[in-house]
Image (cartoon, rainbow, N blue to C red; front, side, top):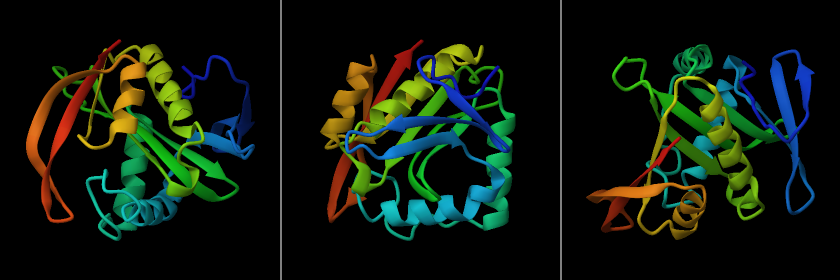
Amino acid sequence: MNRLVGYIYTYEQKEDGMMRNVMLKNTHRVEIREAVSDDAVNIIDFYNVVGGESDFLSFGAGEFKREIEDYSNYIVSVSNESNSIMLLATIGSEIIAIATINSSQKERTKHVGTLGIVVSKNYAGLGLGKELMNELIEWARQNGITRKISLVTNEHNTKAIDLYKKFGFDEEGLLKQDNFINGTYQNTVMMGLIL
């Protein structure tokens, strides 16, 4: 099975796998491809920057602490799992978004994938989150294992919650005072999509 699905789009074969091109609302051409081990440093750097751009992530600026070799190995393990994927959206060599589905390998829970999408502040609102959501959901539908996608988000992340609902996600619960951000305790919304 092709790990990048994109039923509407054409793909280019690259040395390190498949890649899809999309055009953002601002006419920037973006490449979406699966992460490889050599991306570890750039992914860590990206997360450490975007952590300071939003109060809706589980970490702040500079708090994504990972050893490069360990994270490189993690990327390899994700690519070897049929029910997990890590996609990068790039312009040139710059990562502008990361989209993941991570799944347990335990028999009882491997049908559930946890979705995460992080878009750089400079590229928010241009349709990239929607493109990445489409890509992940279609990939999950076709991987032969995933039957449910779960996610969590801050209760104040209303734009994201509205997007998730448009894709069919339902609110499944509330984790009360789950985060401490800017001096206040905030709740986390749990959402799920049955495929």
